[in-house]
Image (cartoon, rainbow, N blue to C red; front, side):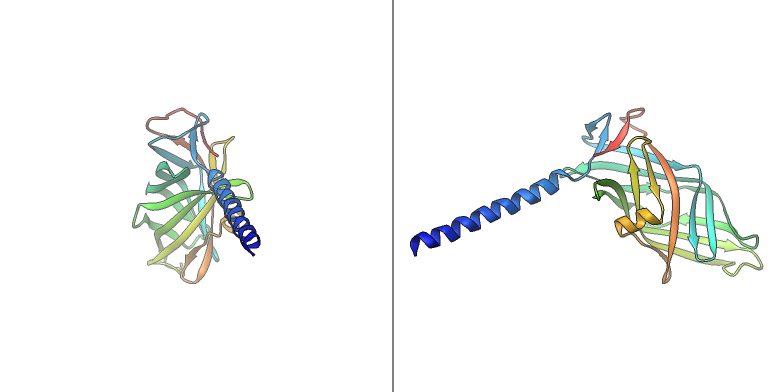
Amino acid sequence: MRIKSMRVILAGVLATLALGSVFSASASAAPAWKFDGTTLSGEENIVGAAVSSGLTIPGLTTTCEHFLYNMEIENSGGTGEGEIVELPLFDCGTSSPYCTVEAIEAENLPWPTKLMTVSSKPYLFIEGIEVAILYGGEFCALGETWVPVRGTAGGSIDNTTESATFNSSTFAATGADLTVGAASIEWNGVFPTEAFEWHREDALSVG
């Protein structure tokens, strides 16, 4: 019985060590921010600027010709994270001849962000998104109404082009969801991104 008990204990120890190895492997695989192939130490400020980006509420797409995000980033525990501190939105209009955009504002900044891996691909995940849009137009169904956009967003990262892409596929991959009331909406945009402090002109990547 003593030998049998020792075998049971040994098996349990080995199982625990194996499980720990799995968790360690997962942790080491967590994506981190890098510049010129070197893992970021300390903090950096990066800016993503889309040529054009749009939010689609059922029946109406709102597009901004100048859509930027300003994000403070760092690596914590081997994983990239950060927060969006500014989201300037300019020259916005809609797909409807009856609706204009009188105002559009990002609210309750900063918004937390983190890097994640899905099916071996790196993604940027944004939480706590709050954008308010005021539409105008005498015949616009949403005219003179502040429309609240709330939720999360996930964008795939391309190290070759140093950009983040947001669309329905990247939302599905990361489990992100942006809503207006009970309705889910789409966000489409490609954001070339670069550093604006210590690593200006250094190649930005995730891995």
